[in-house]
Image (cartoon, rainbow, N blue to C red):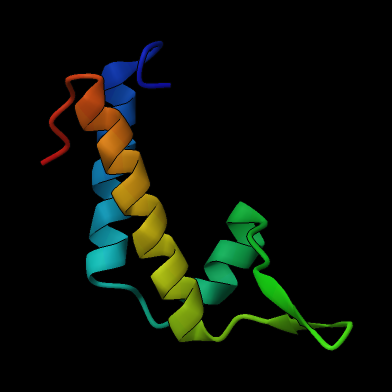
Length: 78
């Protein structure tokens, strides 16, 4: 998306950064409903869903990675 629509990519990254900086109380249900993001780990052959804090940590990690990609392509998301 950065190469195809840089302005849109920058706008979307700014939105995701804002959510990661100040997450709404219903972040996890919204991520599941609209983003189909279900995060879990395996524990003794059982799937264990991430906690709300782990979802937020995952989102912040993704923001970091996306920001590096955008900046590497010359975009300034902030």
